[in-house]
Amino acid sequence: MKSYLSGITSVLTILVIPLFFIRLLLIPVFPAIEYRMPGFPEDSYGFTYEERVKWATYGMEYLLNNAGPEYLGDLRFDDGSPVFNEREVQHMLDVKIVVGQALTVFRISLALLVALGLFAWRRGWVDSYSQGISRGGWILLVVLLTLGGVALTSFWQFFAGFHAIFFEGDSWLFAYSDTLIRLYPIRFWQDVIIYIMGGSALASGLLGWFLGRK
Image (cartoon, rainbow, N blue to C red; front, side, top):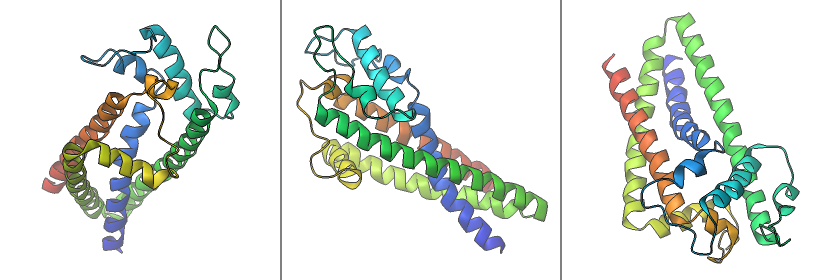
C-alpha cells in the first residue's frame, strides 16, 4: 500500500509542478510585464505599448472567464474593423478549451496530492509520501532537461510539435499582420517556455533534493 501511495504521489507531482507555473502565467497582467522585458520587439505594424496591453489583456481574460467567442469577436478598433478575425477567434476558442482542461487536471491533481498527504500523515507514512514527491521531482527534472535541450536545438520544431499535439492542422498559423501574432510574437512564447520550464526545473530539483535527503 505504501508503495502505491508513493507511486501515485510521484505521478501527481509531475503533473502539479508545471501546471502550477502555467496557471501562474495566465494572470491578465502578464503581457504588460512581458512587453517591458529587455529586448522585447515592438509591434512593426503600429500597436503602441498601451494598445498591445489592452488587447492582450482581453485575450488572457478570455482564457479564464466563462464568456463565449463573441467576447473577442465583438472587439473593434476605432475604425470599426474587428480586432480579431474569425480564424483568430476560433483558435482562441481552441486554446480556451485546452487551458480549461489543463486547469481541471491541475485542480484535481493538487487536491489529490493534498489528500494523499493528509492520508499519509494519519497512517504514519509521511516518509513514503516524501519519497514519492522527491522521485517525481527528479523524474520531472530529467524530462524538462530533455525537452529544454530539444527546444534549444530547434525551437520552431519544438513549438510546432507542441501545437500538433493539441490543435488540428495549421489552425494555429497566422500572418505576421494578424493581431494574435502582433500581441504574442515568437519571443513571447520563447519567454513563456523559459519561465515554465525554468520554474518547474528549479522547483522539482529542490523538492527532489530536499525531500530525498529527509
